[in-house]
Length: 74
Image (cartoon, rainbow, N blue to C red; front, top):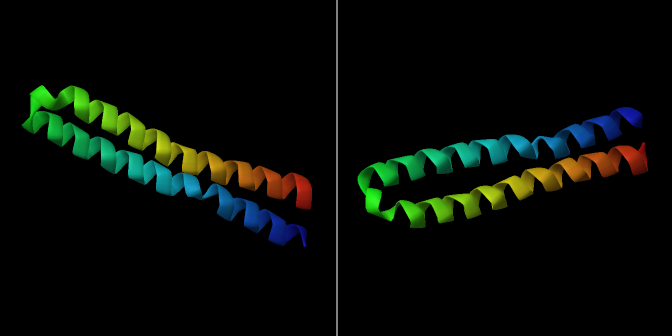
């Protein structure tokens, strides 16, 4: 039973991988957009920060779920 709890917690924490990939792709696209239109840097930066915050929130939720699985089921 403890092995299944550890596996479940590990899978929950893996959401950080998706968030990292998403933030990396978004940052690269924002850098390309700023290179093409430097005058729109402010709008692009605001949108990038909002998107990164939402993607990072997903990773934090996965981390919290992993901790809850360990503490309450372990």
